[in-house]
View (tube, rainbow, N blue to C red):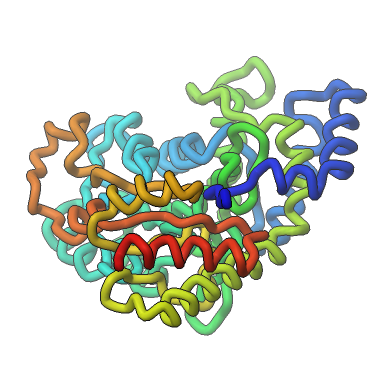
Length: 373
């Protein structure tokens, strides 16, 4: 049996008629850059996220870069970033001449540890915090926003892995990416809401920030050919927006299915009496399971074993950011952020396609039981 990490071709075949029709409309009209489908998607996603402004950009990485720029982050500024995340989070900070200040994670959620954030704020002058809602699980935004408001620090939510995730925030249910000054999203093909290439989004309730992002994404021009700032070429392609418009209405159901798959995994691991040999993610309200990540000894050998059984896996992430060669000049050493360093040796993402059935899930779990003994 083959169980891929994610069946993108299968998803396309389910929606083929709708997607083909949407793409064909763009091709016939010939409006490939900032066409009407972009504006339509921005309106629809803003309503879904319950934010005032949603602006399509070229990628999730660009969403982070433009957001930092719009908030005035620049040379010499320090920005708190979790060390256990995708490179783009810290890369955007560095591209503006600012310095990432790496923070360790909570060992259960894998998200930024607010207690360590406060310790750093008391020692350093911090311009911004970028909490990452890793693997689809929202951060503790109440604590982080309390800190940000107390110390006058800007917050950019990296929600690239968590579109649709619900956050219980000060007595209200909010969407991940709608709480901080700015929220950033990615529509990379493997994301829960994905396009067929690169695509991203910036969300905010701040009118002035929205205007800055709108100008920055078109080379800093307003009106056209008149440049008040040096911006970027970072626009969401019209074809990708058309695809996203089709998929958006299915996102709530896909999120439910991902939670169902995660619950079935946890139940199967419990029934196979694997407690103590493998640590499964908690089924938390609001979690949209962009990835279903377990923690296990002999991770690399297990991944190779599962590959031979036809089961797709991936390691997110094998080396924390503070130990990456390009950040050597910041002075971090092995042992500085031990929780992230330990996690990088143990985490393994298992197949989490929304359409996984019981037989496929049991095959994955039985294969892991066979390896663990």
